[in-house]
Amino acid sequence: MRGNSLLLTILLTLCTLPVLAKPLQVAVASNFKNTLSELVVLFEQCHGQKVVLSSGASGKQYAQIRQGASFDAFFAADSERPKLLELNGHVVTNSRFTYALGRLALWTKKPELMPLGYQSLEAGYQRLAIANPKLAPYGQAAQQALVRLGLWDFGTLGLWDFGTLGLCQK
Image (cartoon, rainbow, N blue to C red; front, top):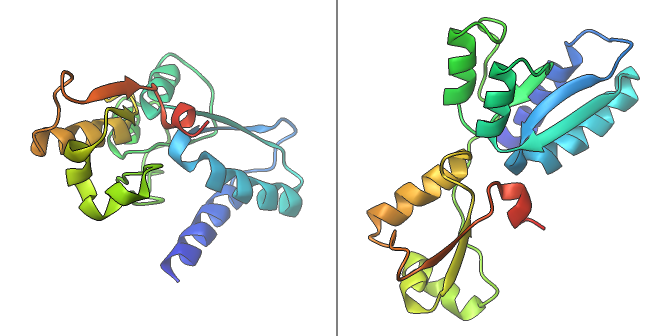
């Protein structure tokens, strides 16, 4: 039920944007692109308003907006960057809201390792792909979790930096 109300909130938020002759430009974090793409289809059908999504790491999009990139909406993977944009006058005051809460997940092609949970990282992984901690909130969260677990050792665990979740999904 909570997921349905969240999707409805996002759809209604998009619906409150004025209908423009030109497409709405929306920056979206890679981790939310697929979901927002489905909502955009519904929005476009309801309102006849074209929406163009630009997906990537929240950190890169934050930098682009600070440098003057023109987006009508920004769906970041964290709350810090939109807050900084608001504090510095780059977005409409009091327009921020939390649209989703995320969790880290460990995925593997080796199902026999999954019952071990995070301990499987010690038991058989040679490589681990995470988003760049400097650019992507989920990369930063993954780094923090690995540090807490004592596994943030490049010599033991070969980390692959994909820059953003979008590249990990391909």
